[in-house]
Image (cartoon, rainbow over all chains, first blue to last red; front, side, top):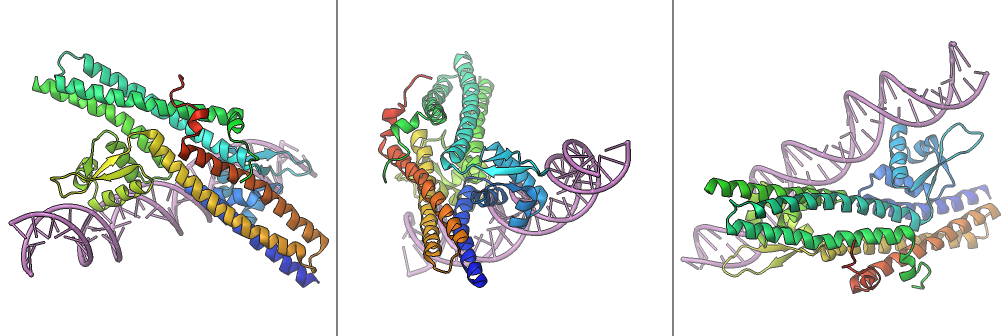
Length: 183
Length: 183
DNA sequence: AAAAAAGTTAAATAAATTCTTAACAAACTT
DNA sequence: AAGTTTGTTAAGAATTTATTTAACTTTTTT
């Protein structure tokens, strides 16, 4: 009876690890560090965890868990919770993939839009100066114009990406693509 | 006059590098190797390039350019072109960010959906076996059920992600989020 | 307020990834 | 068909990134 319990518990662990491995590998692919990826995937099957529980479960150092959980908080995939009776900090994983993964992408995309649009604006100013420069030869003016137009055209993409983020944040995208649509 | 040309040409180069740096940094963030990221960003301002031109421009080894350009082809951000008169292979960068970046995401997301759904299906089977196992205690059955339901719930997300990929591939998403909307 | 426990920062080690050098294979030219 | 040019594969070197150990700061308890 007790041995049977152990066997079925082991089966449950095995099943969980299949999913943990898949989730962690996916996150790895998106540039999340292995420790953070494994931690999130592990926490996905737990109600809440303390740093010491994480260290024990993943067999890793406490600073590694500390930095990993902070990174996961930054991308809003883990939140701190207050558990009375314990003075250790407790953390819970966001179990709703819509929220956790979308928080991740929106953050990435917003950063991308901001940084690239800034670079584009600066470069376009430079190209305008070359075009207005009376010492520029016709060839050089033509070149500067070509690049200016190429960048102007690319802005469409960044504005679109910004709109996509906004429609995800507001939930409007689910009017177009419902969550519960049958496969 | 010639010195002035050099100065304005240098200004153009400087402006280009601002954008090249931003694009490459963004790609870096998404897990593309620095060499490939820099290469794509550089090619974004070129009509076409050969391996030797890449090596010269980026001051890197030929094998590095070879593997980088292959990786960029895999994610459909670069395509091979036939240039008659030259026996060197020539490559062009996809200049339309809608196409290049969307190809990248669709590929990543499809992989994510496939791998994770496979793991989920396997794990759910395992949980069902534990539930049906007559030697399982009520506690264990309850635990297995809890995880089974959690995974069942998560499938909604993967199906939605699959729908998103489909709507991007088909272009239907642009009916909801137009490309040319004003900022 | 002192002591203990929990968590973080910083430096150092370990591991993994990226790039290069060198050898090889394929394709094109003469 | 032999030689030359182009491109790739494989092994090794170097850089970078991730993790750990150790010292330190903060918080909590007695």
